[in-house]
Image 1 (cartoon, helix red, strand yellow):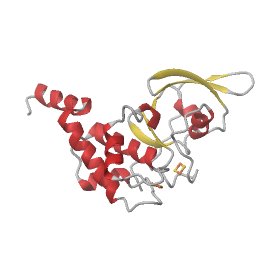
Image 2 (image 1 turned 90 degrees about the vertical axis):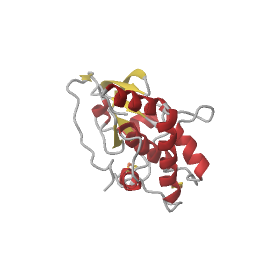
Image 3 (image 1 turned 90 degrees about the horizontal axis):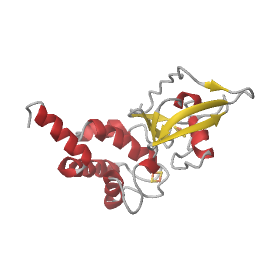
Image 4 (image 1 turned 120 degrees about the vertical axis):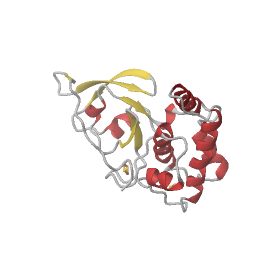
Length: 193
Ligand code: FES
Ligand code: FES
């Protein structure tokens, strides 16, 4: 079971239900405060894609492949298993929130450079699982990387390049990305170097 396989559904404390049975939810998506109308039966994956956020992919739709992974409040979660109403009040990051071709995130850059991307279908979910790991730990062991990615299936590769990519991204983040700087500042303020 992968790190993002343990999906906990915490229903929102407050949702706004309109007269026609549609919920209005407020969410922070990739830094933008949004209000969406969602059906009670709609998954977060359905809602994201219906609203134009297509980075989360629909693979199995049953919680097996990890291609629909998004980050919710810092944790990788399977959006195909989450009711959209569970996104109310949450901070959500999709692959669109990381970077693009002109300003790639270090993880995206490392995936491209190491040849970790073939068809690309699994890659958004895999990169978001990696980001969740590196946000917590910028110096993961190969075993920790494998554990973080083991809920993300890839039909094209043998996973070796992707593990190399996460390791490379971690090195670069430690050397100078904002995440690495934050960790160094925290260590310095606690007296550790
Ligand atoms: S589409 Fe969600 S786990 Fe496969
Ligand atoms: S690169 Fe094709 S499914 Fe992973």
